[in-house]
Image 1 (cartoon, rainbow, N blue to C red):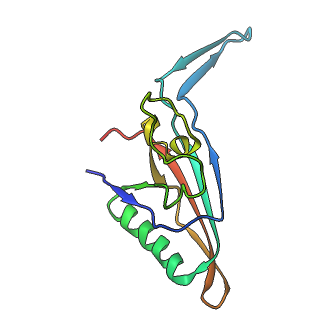
Image 2 (cartoon, one colour):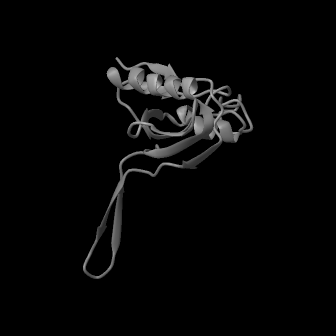
Length: 145
């Protein structure tokens, strides 16, 4: 059974987020009429990219170790206000009325029923002695376990 592995407490220099799409199939007739078959009410495949600039090599190692821990057993990555969500308003949890009341909750994706996995290995670039740039890409999955 897959578990959540916390991402290291390293503040990203920048992040980009693309909300997921709703799984659906479109059928287009020869006359142009379109029918859409939607397979649920949950977004899937949200993308999150975290960039870390000029971090210590020891921090880059923490990220690589997290990648190994997550993928050796095909687990999930979780974020909190001290890791990938640092600097975003909110704490990554839903407000009491279950609305997505803050950006951190939206990025965390867990309130949406999604859980993150790595979308490939992190890219590490050495920029000078004991300093590296790291880029991590994640995809949010609607997992059935």
